[in-house]
Image (cartoon, rainbow, N blue to C red; front, side, top):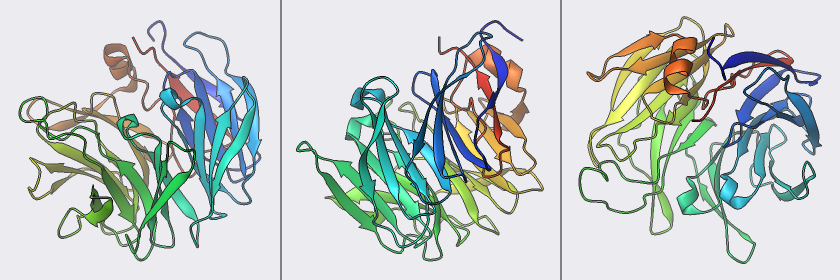
Length: 335
């Protein structure tokens, strides 16, 4: 195992199942959330020192499904969503002193997924709910929040949301058309949908919805495109498959191909910074990495090999609905 990399087990202190684990932008702190209704923060390092517990955040009245760190340009901010139908924005004042900066109670059922927009759009958060809708919360200059809702996004329930990169595909090799607000979502209707904001209104941007799964879509993740001339979304499903969706250029039809059939539900997918490595977490408590070659073919890669070559830490923590009370983390340098 190379210097600066390793696998550490964090005894989280949670009293129930851990549902989500996320590293901050710099890979220095980890947030976890659990059915015990709490969020816990830990300090991690690339050395041999064990992760240190920092603080426990309490405020939700039901299982907390996901946590998400905002970009550090906005300060130390975490969003969380819960079965209690709420989204809470937590803000750090003095070191390790966190308060509830905002509580959103816009939904009529469990809020299952949250995702911060690229920082170029400002402090903007999307939330998907079992009530079938997606909310978009935008922080305004006067300190208030603008609230918009995509009604009936997935009528049976929204399970996941993920923002597109801020730059349009092809911006490095062709005309740069400016910032584009887009979202992808997955739902209990077995589909993936793409949404685009135009003149302040959200509309579906894929017709028909992307349909290749045979059961609930558990997670969607829009890959960084780094200005290259294509868009890529990964979707994970209860049916055991992960599908890679690609769109050649704006307006083209999305094409889907099955990356792998894991023969067990796949809960989470997460991209590396470069967008050519995908981590998949399945119901057998396994995390596998998949790498795209220059010819577009995907193959499974070893965790250690990828960490050594690419120094990736995007998927440093396993994300799953069914983690044990401890959390396993791969710590990698960002250099």
